[in-house]
Amino acid sequence: MTVLVIAKLQGDTVKFRQALADRGDEFAKIVEASRSAGAIHHRFGIGDGFVLVQDEWDSAEHFQQFFADPSLQAFIASVGGAPAPPEVIVADAVNSADQF
Image (cartoon, rainbow, N blue to C red; front, side):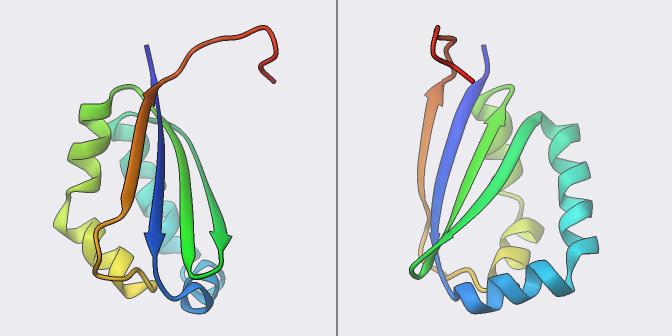
């Protein structure tokens, strides 16, 4: 069974939007590494002073190992992530008749 991971990171969203535009190659390298580590789906959302991460992983443990990597944490800080720990929610993914 896979898990859904929602993470809310406080930070500088203007800097983050600019990093998405200017540093796409670095984001692409992280995608490769995350897929190798067990990521299945990934998407960002930007709100008022925060970035939302919506992921699906093969296990909570694989997500936690990947997210704890010091080089990933340094990258997050460099693209506007605040030093405060993110709010992370992990839940088992389930199928339902209304899923799309």
